[in-house]
Length: 473
Image: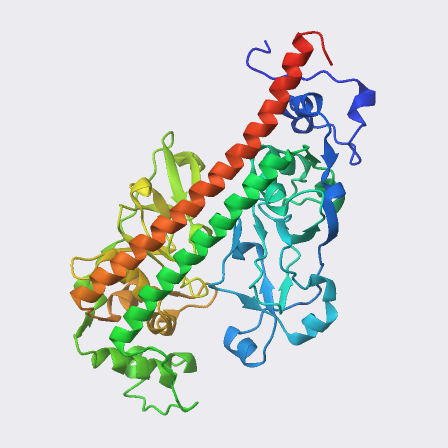
């Protein structure tokens, strides 16, 4: 009758140990956790490695417009969406008022801190680099923690994202409407006694991880600079009047729009710049193919599903949800092919653009993306172009709606695109190829670091079991 089921039999006195929340659900007592405590000696709670830690609960804090915030030197408000384990994305920061900076002193970021997502998906972990902007507040979805000298911060981070650290985070989180790990539960996570050899090895690997990632970002920036130079937009500063006067004939009767945002002078200036581009221009619909056919997933077939949160700042896909068709959300209706370009249609996420790599061929993406390909502009140039300040402004201009502001299909197809010289396109493609190689190198090193940590834990367990089998211990 119990065939295929897992059963753990535990004394009630044992149930109460390491269980301040009086949990009696079966998930909490899975054999993998009980065996971990039994087989790994010298475990210490995470709390023993914390020099300082805090999670701020903000009250009435509001996100403000980024342009206004940068003019007033307002603080960055770092959120879980800005983390891409083990890095912090710097492409779409939110900002809060300077009053919050003065009020929430304990929320201020420190270089070298480990940031742990404790509210929401409870998945991401990152380390604050030394060159990160000092004027940053960390949101309440993240726990900020400084590690003491008893352990390498890189080893602790690697353990927390390993299969063992992830399992314990899942064990201690509470699953209500939004998952949450309290400070006492976070500090209860058991940490093995890692060898000094492993710690030195992981530290060296992280030097190379961050070096590769940094160089990857530099190469992407060089591709972007090359494109802007070709378009005559490097160091471009628009001197526009804050007022734009239009007749009814030249405004509403032509566009159907009456909102002031649509007629900002900067938009006209940039549009005219495209029209005067030396290599010419064309409507997007004339140079790109739009793949907007809906695909209905098969109930019992597994798919990779890509959503907005899976897009990295350099146009890479950082992950996906692997699930059966019947388990996917209703917006998972767009099938993508290798080397197509995904463009977010949602205002506020317009920077979320990516090239589909070969291993995501035939994956599904959210209908919040437009999926493009072109015979006249290569995928790498399309990506850099759409992420450039020029096209970001053009996309923003054409967004409309009330509850969810987005750019519709007709507006997208009519957007003017500058035609980029083929030699420039080839150079951009090469910059991005090198950038992608370095980013992949960083990803592989991180996977290797996790594997090394997991292997040391498994070797400790194996040695203990062998000792017990021989009558020792």
